[in-house]
Image 1: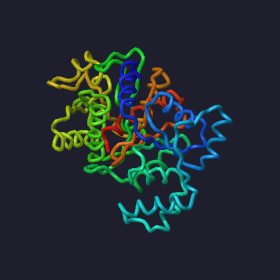
Image 2: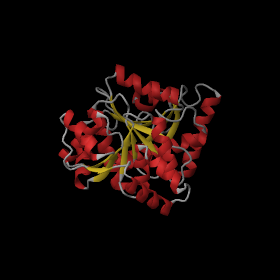
Image 3: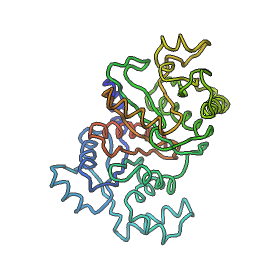
Image 4: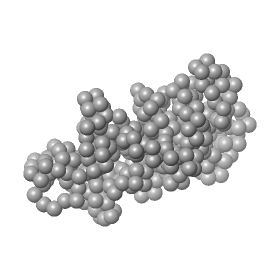
Length: 334
């Protein structure tokens, strides 16, 4: 990520450290990330599991957990208390079912976040994206006004000089295989809000396609056009345009040649919305592999509470980028 942007985000996190839960306490990089939260003063880690077991593992890999808190989800008394707290805010599950569900660490973390015992949750190093999403949707639920959960990532591309320097917001590269127009609009709105709230950018959202402004026709392009109309109707404050090919979205000269109308977005987009998961996932990995881009995310959007989902192959540096942005988000999204 752009160094100045990263430094600003870390400083914001440090000013009001939030409580962050890590359910995957049998993973070395997760414990190293928790240690870094304390060392850098950016967050207050809560680790799910038996304290003695976690500390023994941490010692074996040279990690200090001083400053961390623990929640033993196998402790019967703690399970009962947590189940009662959840039942007080949601009657969806029986107490017996909740107690069983709490034995799974990621479920436990989501339940703790729902009842306000923690501010945010970081998972996905061991659990799959599907596991994390299912737990979040089951125990926390969707944010008001949203019909789907989606992902957003921030990528830093060496040598790219866009409106925000080397950085772009990309969505959805991890969750929705074939979003319809309503879902695509949800993704665009959530991503624009992430850019504004988290990064303090003025979002300019480009809806991507293999067509630019009618250069081709296909039913998939109609979905993109319908999504743009949906966003403009629901959120007229968001600058959004398309359908654009990637070059028309982010390269001013290409936009000047291909977009023959006034546009606040063409050639200057800082938020790119892919039309489907095939293109999104492939696109971000191409940038990472061939463009040497650093990707931070995916963050999960459309959920009522802040959640991040690590890539299972992410190095510690990328995990810390995710965590810092999650902690800043937790200061804003309650």
